[in-house]
Length: 334
Image 1 (cartoon, helix red, strand yellow):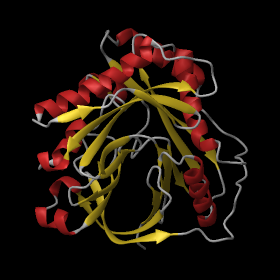
Image 2: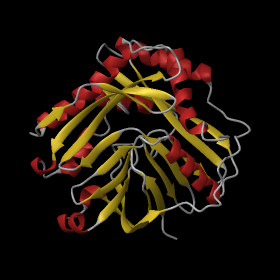
Image 3: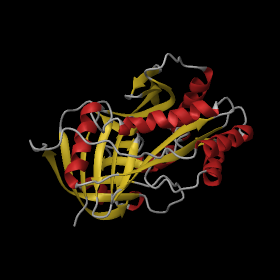
């Protein structure tokens, strides 16, 4: 049975259903293959993985939900957010290791059991896409597992004659009275510096928008947009994997962040914080796979993380992971 993807792009009303075919490595496709076909990209986070997975799109059609689809989903009975004491101990250790301009993105999982059916997965996607209209929402459905998500971060997005790249980092709770601090500005500046230096090193001209903030439901982030001209770059795929993983999902320096992730995270991120979206004839619509969860039978795993610097507060970092998990958990029961 072929894999199926349901998706909606940010700030658009049209839903799409993709039927996927043969699996490929995006970095090894020939110019003719890239010219004539479109590919759904769904890579793992691990930058050392040889295969940069994508699937040939056999069919791409508009999709409408059936009238009898569920409008509410029962809440899970028990949710395990992880061992808080262990998390806090690890964050304290990481803080002690980081220098002034270094950062590590430390992630964890939230898990629960749930009786999923195909109809309830589609219902979850429907509710997700209706609630988070400014996000890229999707349901990746396979025979053995599926992924759902609502990510706010564009990695490389073709918009008319420009390509936009997001520098998205720093997090505060929408409902709190918290204001942006030096810690969040520093986090986001590290991401912007990484993107800018990568573009300069590859002789790509770009413009930068003023920094703003984006509300993603439960939390909001700092955002700066980089804009490049498509016709100025002939090696977009190479550029994608030079930019990703950014300090927003790995750390700064990248070497330091990846080393600490390997040492302190006790699980495989799999597709969490990897690349997701469509690559078509040098017109990418690619995102970083955040605010996502994986379903295998009844086991459901939500992936969340936060940027740790030497200015971090461990309790605040723990709460940030809970707030981000609630982006998805809030879909239940409402």
